[in-house]
Image 1 (cartoon, rainbow, N blue to C red):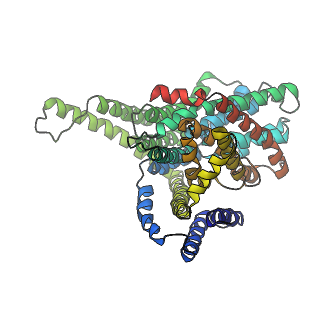
Image 2 (cartoon, one colour):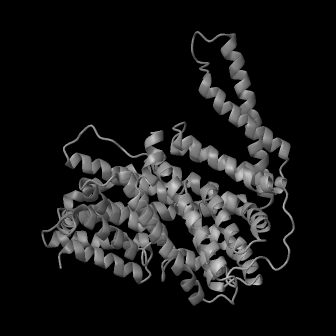
Image 3 (cartoon, rainbow, N blue to C red):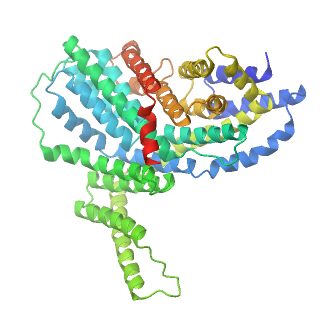
Length: 514
């Protein structure tokens, strides 16, 4: 077997054996670099580019937004936002057949767009919603499958870590494809375009899931009955109190990125600060202070954009000085609200755990990305890049056949590998040939994003399944969880087919906005 294919096979084998992913990638890459050099199949001088590749990853302005988005999600997860949403939505929809399942999907979508953390969402709903569904007579498989699937929405509904990584991978692959075509005035794909492209398909998935739950409740009433006890009426004020704050945060972050007002880093900073203020609000900080701080920061952002002030200029007059003083006052009010919220969270022992979890998650992601860069460099040096392109070009069916093979390959790997590993190891090899065959990169990104989201549900290594196994009551067996997600995996395939047959679902919004 050629060294490049043997290298890829060895990577999968060692990962399945349970070795830490980042160390496994680095070890396999090192071993095959030495083996290739010994067999005169790999130029060792190629590793001289490794330092530049690592530096490019660590300073990439897109990837450096990941820690802030992770912090945003962790802070919101550790406040009571998930519990309040679940309780309110459960009371709102619980009176109809399948209503609890609908509430789980709605809450999953809202948490997806505000926290984006699969594990946190699945565990929260597994501890709160799943017991309520079982008490009210839901089929255990449907209940478990609904909770697992709702948690994965955090990977397809922006902002999400998956979409940030995918945007960077797709942009790099798109540039490579254009270089190979002889174009040197190249186009790029931004995070904003990827977010805009994934927004409608993500909401489409939510609609498909809800339609399935309501349809199943109508056909098989015993699988998803209405609440046995009459739910307490929920007022408009309670609905607004549970839904409006996360929606405002979502609009602020997504609107800033998609609208081109802020870079991903700046929008992620807005999200992190907004999450801290929202968590402070939930945990007992003076609501008037939080509202005043949020309003002051919003006013400062708008005013500074409309009427910027540069006090260092020699022609600065009294008008500019007055504006500067006003801006400083607004900043002081905002900082006071942030400090007060942080003090409240510190008293609740939430700051240190949130920072520690952010550090762990960020370190895992970047370690994998860095080692994947090492792996891909060795793989390309062994001729793997040309072999992948040749395999895709030789498949029957032309561009369509190549895309079907690529999607099927990603789907199968999702049973065994994490989305980060697939994104940073496999996709840089698969995407450039597909783009050269004429596939739209934005549309391609959305198809792959839905496909990668499925990796959280596919046994035996779907992370969503593990998270729910840890949070579910003893009456829910692993077999029930596995059987429960099967219909939703099929719905994922249906969603991919819909976006495949109607590409405008993914492309019209980014084209309209960019």
